[in-house]
Image 1 (tube, rainbow, N blue to C red):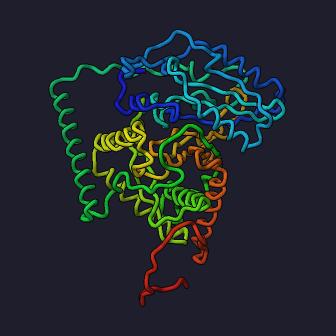
Image 2: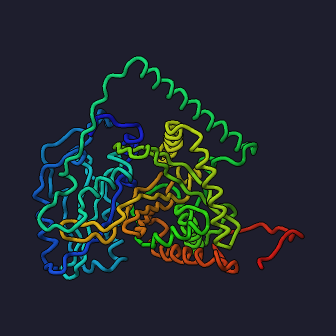
Image 3: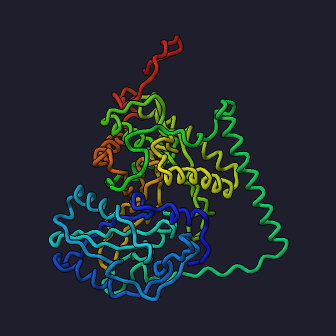
Length: 481
């Protein structure tokens, strides 16, 4: 791995605490081959994995610091497999609620900062032909797109009992060192930096104009999210839930509604979160907000590290018809996409760094309970393999991403599309909400109702915890026919 770290990479190390570890993870569910010995298969597989004591970059790298400040990575010759690769026998691997609770406990534990920043946890019950692998990696190693690419490289297109190499021992292509820049090239880089700075200045000018209600159709103003039982100062303790949605159905609905798959899912998540918060007695007079990650890589680019922007998007409010809520989200989502398309990626990345830096400072100073959050939920979509993959001779059934908590709290929802299914992982602090399982049920119900509402306008969400000011009936108000 390259020795240079971006400011965004370093921020994940600087702001990490026991209350808010900065690792991301995935829960992988796998199926043993038909003739496997269910009692010993995972034990033997764990033993095979432990034989790989030499790792490649970045899995052989710990962080080099100066007075606590990260300056780069330093390689280690061998890894402590007893720490990095662990085995857990549990009561019932098919008990999803108990499995989610175990994952939440492991996810809450901070990685040892003196070792390479990753772990593998094998989960099995000794009687089922299904087992799990919970893998976590520090966010400073890379963003979601990078980490998924690395982990999937350890899987095969067809089952193979003999040949396999775990992800930490796979050889990765080294990037060629950049040749010294010529004077003309350096001038071009300076010019691009200047243009990005101008774009960043324009972004803030437009936000100020929106603040004074001159340029209302622009991106949301940062730190205008609504305080809820999910937001505030991040504390230790996590609630984790996993769920699935047929992604083929999502894409079909997106085509029918002239929307995108992300917008369809945002609508279902929005309705689900409203219903969860209503269970806790919360009613809202304005829309909630989501943080939307934007991948700033060019098509085909395979750089490591973090190369994303995260910007708030307003969700829906005031409509009980799921389809009309979707239309609101489409408009609000595309306002932000339009802004991103008309600014250089470096400008949007810098904008993310500025607003996230403020959020991190508020968290560090323990002011997140006082300041409004940037957003109420963070939803990100990581494309995965479109066909079945195998770890040795085990079939990968699902892969649920479990992300870190953002400053200011909320619920972090990450989905990975795998083999035609959206595998969804949800995580939040459990200081006020003990379980996110109701949210998973609400999201499923919301998606199914959204599907039906396209053809049946009479379908409405009876109450999702929104307060609307009464508006006199107008002569232009028309009922559905």
